[in-house]
Image (tube, rainbow, N blue to C red; front, side, top):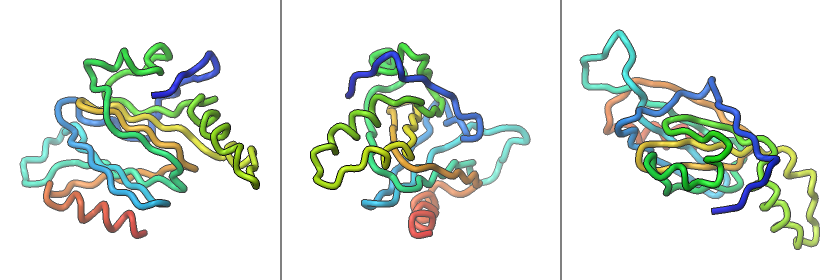
Amino acid sequence: MYPIDEEDRLVELQNVPKPEPGAPCPMLLAEENRLVVSYWLPEVPPYDTGPTAPFAFVRFHGPYFHLFGPPNDEALDGHPLAKCGLAPYSVYEVESSSLIRRLEAMNAVHPYHQPAVFDAFHHYVFTFHDSTFECVAHGLETFVEHIHFDQQLQRMSVLLAG
């Protein structure tokens, strides 16, 4: 992982759908400069009894760095941002991110390094049931759709291309 300091602050993003607590089945589709994440959402009334389910699709603009893996919800207290209030089944932005500052310092050896470039990045954290996803990007946009599980990857491909 990465160390944090007293500057890191978590802000829960209310405009990004929270993942389903039980089994959100997150999926990533990425190329070097494009990234889409999708996950299953909790069903809300009126309950859909058809063959589809609600999915969130999150397309990142200018993704620079991402992590996907541990900790799961039961080990979330081991994440560096846990002491900042990181909770399961939520979506956050990390203000004054140590990770972005570390990435900027790592890039400082580049002969044309421009520290100001890193001011445009945002650090996002998605906490799922069995994993955590983090992304440093210029921004994100979300889409919510009811689709069949078999259509998840196809829809992600369309969003990745667009």
